[in-house]
Length: 421
RNA sequence: GGAGAGGUGGGUGAGUGGCUGAAACCAGCGGUUUGCUAAACCGCCGUACGCUGUUAAGGUGUACCGAGGGUUCAAAUCCCUCCCUCUCCGCCA
Picture 1 (cartoon, rainbow, N blue to C red):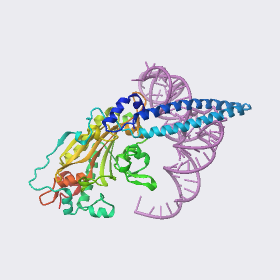
Picture 2 (picture 1 turned 180 degrees about the vertical axis):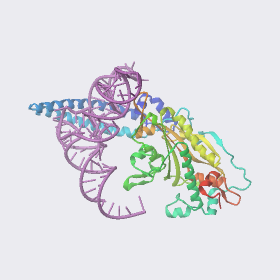
Picture 3 (picture 1 turned 90 degrees about the horizontal axis):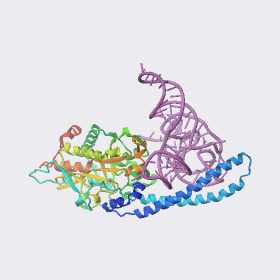
Picture 4 (picture 1 turned 135 degrees about the vertical axis):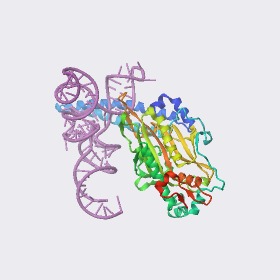
């Protein structure tokens, strides 16, 4: 959510930012409601001041035994007017809130203007793509043959997009999770085991509601949302809290399953492990001082990149353009791993700065030592990393002509085996 | 799931309709005293929003005592609903 004062005072900047994100702006309607709101507050507060004053007088009169009934009679009409104004104010504020929640965050000046994924900039590439002299297979062929991922039984038990990992694939995933968490721990992230369902306030806090409501599975009986990413519970961990400046930055790593309805996805994008309804992910979340958030974004990206390098997986870094980066971010990098069997880049991490956009919704602040006032902190998050596509990339990049899969060195201490066959 | 108790400012904790935005104490901040530390003493010490002020300092008003409603001229205080915590019982990985 943006600051209404910024919308009021830097209207053009906001409008241009929204335009750059390919979104429709309703700023004029917001400003009109903002005006109404302030007028009503003014009227209401004047009347309330009078009410308070007269009520105090009534107290005194009663105490000294005077008859206050005529004054009380007079206040009845004031009371009615206050009620009317408050009702009007409430409905204006509800509408205003509703509209404000639909305004996207505005991009950082360093973000390239663009409309489609084609406008994203590849800013870094790492690793050798492949130097094999045999035909590389996509991971689903390999896992089928090895019998280590069971999509069919997953469909029977839950539905499409809910596979079983069997034997060594399950162990490989567990190894990756431990590896990711250990790495995060070594770099200053506190490990957090979070709820995988959240309430409505939390879903709103990180911005899943209202703009991405359809992405989530909902347990309607209890009004609980199954998390699409650990970002939701982990960021909400500090909802409605105020930090001392010296406590910042605060860094967490959380492993959770993630649930996404992915309504509307189809075709080759969803083959095999490419896109699932349930998948595992380690998420990195930072709460930082506003002056450091763009440096923290770079180091966050570095923390995610390191994992790919240690696994020996070729990848590239994209700086997302304004039109492709999403509702809540001011700047976002995507990390894409090379899947040699599919000859395709797969997104495995997305590192973003939200500045105060989430903090404002969640009311997360710090006390500034300089001004003594409370200000909103900046939040960031990034995957570190998403599991299934890493599994797919390992299988495809590390396959042998015989259809075996070599386990990356750094994982072997976790898996206790070096080849899947 | 059943029965009971409770949720007040950073903390402890007063406060059952008007003089309470809230005592007192602790913590914190500033100062006096002091060779230094400690102690003592004095002062300050919530947040949001509106108006005003040069996008300042400040001034002023409103709201907030778990959340949301209601009663009343007036609510931390009375009533209703919900949430959370604790104790006991039941159930259970």
